[in-house]
Amino acid sequence: MFLPRINTPNTIVILRIIAAIVVIIGFGVLDLESLAPRFALAAIFGLASASDWLDGYLARRLNQCTTFGAVFDPLADKILVTSTIAYLAASVDGKLLILALLIFTRDCIVDGIRLVHAKDSPEIPIAAGIPGKIKTIVQMSTLPIAILFWHPVITTITLVLACILSIWSGVIYVRAAKIQLK
Image (cartoon, rainbow, N blue to C red; front, side):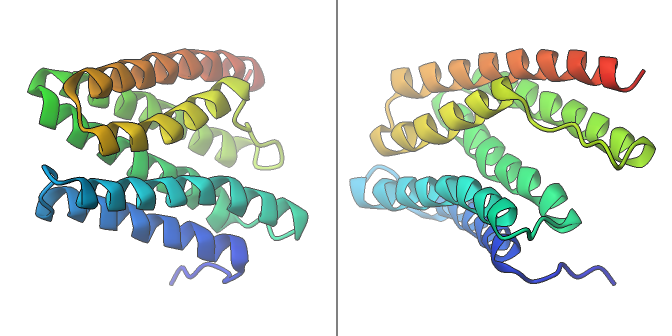
């Protein structure tokens, strides 16, 4: 049975996954026409997003990097971000779901490369580059704004920006992996 080594960074990752589930459920059950529920969801999303930096910092600083953290940290981010993007897209215009699907596809490709590389060369990880970090920072800082203001124009701009950054960072990641995997 797989159980993560419980340390502070892994606990933060687990809490981010729980926060993502709370946000997803909140989208489904709260009255989002009112400001208070949107504020609560934006705050939970924002705190969960901030925890992404914190768990990585602590894992490196305390020398507590684990396989669980390496695998579940990016998955927690994807659960939080992609589910929020999908919900926002569907709430504005179902056609915007294509953006969420493109982001999801990019994430699957990047994760597939990581899995292949981890199996073939576990001693040389392919770390997230600057474009991937920019994508994550922009997504995690703009999505709470879209949740809070709940306006079709703000949401559409946020989703288009998220998609462009995802594709851009994905292309760069694939190119870098292609060089490393040779």
